[in-house]
Length: 234
Ligand code: IMP
Image 1 (cartoon, rainbow, N blue to C red):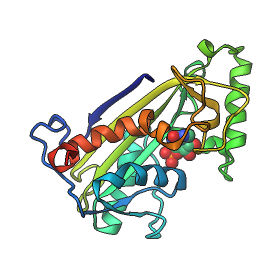
Image 2: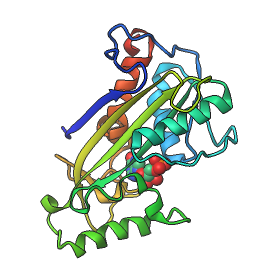
Image 3: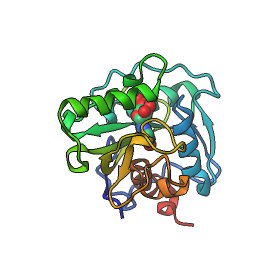
């Protein structure tokens, strides 16, 4: 088992997931996946599939990409979810996520996408992480500790920034940075991340194996318990 954690916050988050919190979603509802990142949209669609939710992505609706001015993953997820919910007029689910490397003081963190430059070149981003670790003399897995973090925000339309009914859920998965990159599944930094207790990188695993243990899956579990009728149980 990988070490995975999760927590809930946001307006309405005082309610315990599944305990007295009103369901915001039910089977048959339509939801915008507020991301232009194909890899993320694919993973979120896979996770939503069993719940009978009809999804449309921000890219498919040609929604504008709001500026991510937040200083935390949660703040950026809220900006994206509220913007998409208000533009589309239906509930929106946004994901802000990234890689935090301990020896680099948590970098690239909220700038994970930007380490790939304008071209979003993840070979470049992965090389930058590796070179930064080399500069620190961090060679062993113990010196190359890292985690992925995912903040998911579900927002309903009608609110101004920070004022909508929204809920935020965070999940993390811990592991280390391997080099060289291995595997061609997944996306982003997956080829250089080996989760604790496993030999394969996220990019070498079957997609379902990643879904079973990822930061996104941990946040998603809390989202389902809090936002679906009957805690997501049939
Ligand atoms: P943003 O949340 O759109 O700002 O971008 C987050 C960036 O973090 C992505 O572009 C990826 O590079 C990275 N990232 C987030 N989740 C994952 C994942 O599951 N695997 C690999 N990289 C990820």
